[in-house]
Image (cartoon, rainbow, N blue to C red):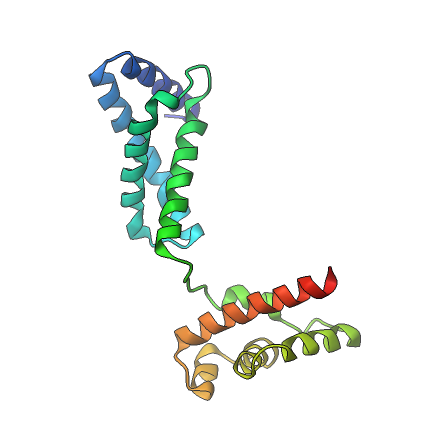
Length: 185
């Protein structure tokens, strides 16, 4: 079933449900659940949630739809209303989980690569910004981004775990970005 057809069905079922038809409400939730699962699963990884958390978010979304069903305006499409609730539940789950995420080191390699910097002034500027980092972070950035060392090699050199190297690099990159924003503003 296409999305437009599904939304039309959901709207009809929601209208019947708000008029007191319990069977229509049961059918609405049964029809919504697979669509919500797909949307939530697709977005969990994108925002740093474990795919195993998807079912919890789906259930929280269904509960919120139930509790907020009177706020749906029948003259408006139901799809955006449902997706807004799902998005909010994903954000809530992300907040509960906390800010600690581990991003693949490859995500930062392109961002930090200085092999393409031809202008000496840019190189000096980058060196000065890296110099503002702490000693360990300077070593991390130089080893991984400038010298092209692997995470494993850098971890061994700095006596850190590979995971700690990734997290420390992520934080160092955030500080570098803040330095650049502050200086170039």
